[in-house]
Amino acid sequence: MDRTIKLGLGQILIEGGEPKRNLERAIKMIKKAKIAGCDMILFPECIDFGWTHPSAKTEAKKIPGKWSKLLSNIAHEMNIWICAGLTEKEDKKLYNSAVLIDNSKNIILKYRKINILSDALEYYNIGNQLKVAETPFGKIGLNICSDNYIDSLHIGHTLGRMGSEIILSPSSWTVDYDTIVGKKNSYGRKWIEPYTILAKLYNLVVCATTSVGTIVGGPFEGKKMMGGSLVVNKSGVILEGEFNEYAGSLSIVDVEIKSNTVKGTQIGKSLKSKGYKFDSLDNIS
Image 1 (cartoon, rainbow, N blue to C red):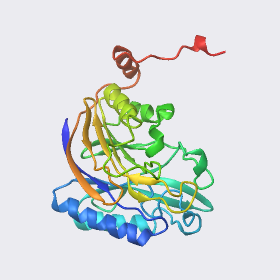
Image 2: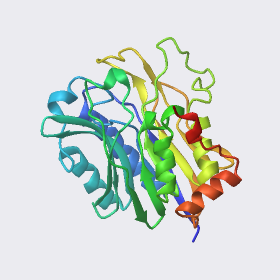
Image 3: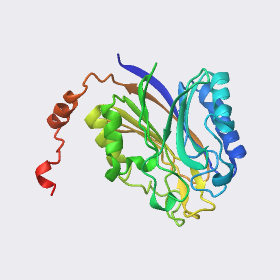
Image 4: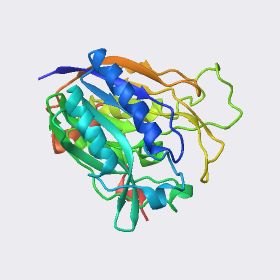
């Protein structure tokens, strides 16, 4: 059965090492999204400490833990679903994680990022699981930011083969420090192309929210986060967030979720009919 979800993209300012202030902004955005009638809100990557901020090494919390429980409580209070990136500490290991929380406080999905950038490996361990959840809105899969690089798109392919009808991707896209506000989105096709490939091949929707602000601390210090969040279906871009480093914004879109009936080896035949080229084992020496 096809469904429609009113999705909010919570493109918020993320300050490195300031989880309380960051989560306060998130809660304000959640309340705004609820007033606007959203069923769900999607936030960026690492909304607690910020992406690759050194403080996360010693101060990150477990999941469930302080910050995930805060989001769970507000999800229940406002009767809204929330997807957000959080930094997760388990034993002595740190993960770049994402959670999907329902309107009854439950963490439906937790995902740990797999395609960690080389400069971020000193912060985050590699995740080792992909999951898809059945929800009232359809089958939802999670990944994070660079998991969708064109050279790691097999992660998205796997979510598609697992039945995802919508992929939620908390992100933290960066540009060089001298990027000028007011210019056209400078990410180009870096994200649009891989999202479109997945959307067309598996008839799904890819949704990514990224943060705004300037990265402070860590290997990417000085890089700007400019927003430009995206929602892409098989027809192309259906929503693009504001491209501006200075102001957070809430973008809202009605996303049509199409039920996928193609399963198992049927998927290979479907991909071939759409022109997808499979590598030949004859090319492997």
